[in-house]
Each structure stands twice: as C-alpha cells, then as structure tokens.
Image (cartoon, rainbow, N blue to C red; front, top):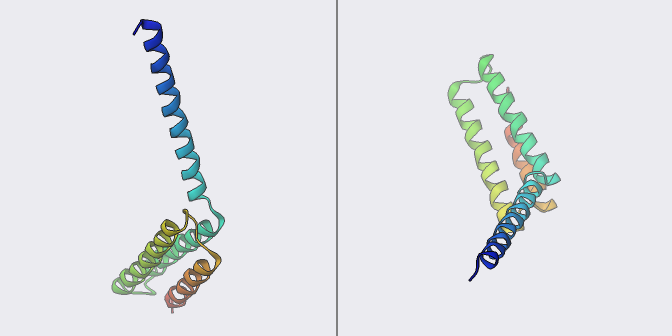
Length: 111
C-alpha cells in the first residue's frame, strides 16, 4: 500500500470513530433528559435535600435519615432498572409506580 492509500484508510477510520462517538453522545444526552426520568430524578433530588434539612434541624434522627436515604436509593435503582429494560426511558405506568413510592417516602420526611 502506498502512503496516499494508507492515509485515506486512516482518515476513514478516524471519521468512523468520530461518528460513533457522536451517536453515542447524543444517545446519552437523550437518556439523561427524557422527561419522565427527569421528573422522577428531580423528585428524588428534592427529597434528598429535604431529608438532609430535616436531619440538620433535628426533626428526624440519624437512623431515620439513613433509612429514608436507603428507600430513595431503592427507588433510584428501580428507575434505572426500568430504563435499562425499555430503551433508556420509563413508561407512564413505571413513572406512576415510582411516584407512588416517592409519595410514601415523602410522607415520612419531617413527620
């Protein structure tokens, strides 16, 4: 193979790699910003802040905060599992189930 041919093959390889990286990057952005997942994860983040605040204010004990965080981690794990099973998004039914679980944790914060 001459130098021109080798350069052309190398250039095509680089273009193919860049194209694959761009496609992968676009998929990742979609996964992170899917509306149902965003809503569920925003609620989990808000509940995390509430748990921390209630613990600082002495409204809940360390053990209660630990248990609430564990419940939230379980919900987050379920959200990730559901998303992994269906093209990186969650269905309305899955979102509704996750919301019910979050409501249960939310009612326990600051009682």
